[in-house]
View 1 (spheres, helix red, strand yellow):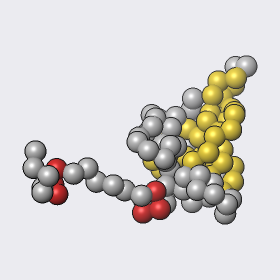
View 2 (cartoon, rainbow, N blue to C red):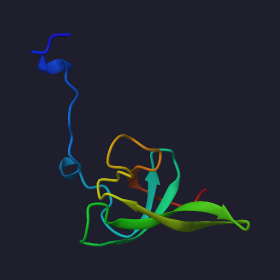
View 3 (cartoon, rainbow, N blue to C red):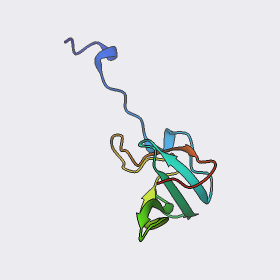
View 4 (tube, rainbow, N blue to C red):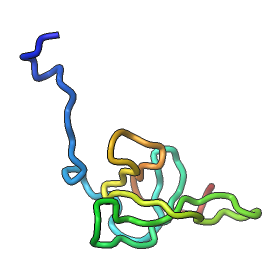
Length: 95
């Protein structure tokens, strides 16, 4: 591996350079196919989309817990994760 070859270096992508996926409150789908509910997007902080993942609870599918996402849909600052939001959801809530 030559140290002069730029094609061999990994690309660095900053969070602020990623396209916005989470545009407001509502339901979204994740990379793993789960549905999440974004309750609010505040103007403070980097991971400012707040919501919950739909889960089975006492026989019902409900948005439960507290999670945060970057407006680009990233669940974590580095690497891909199953809970990364990939786009808006449509239709009925599914677990």
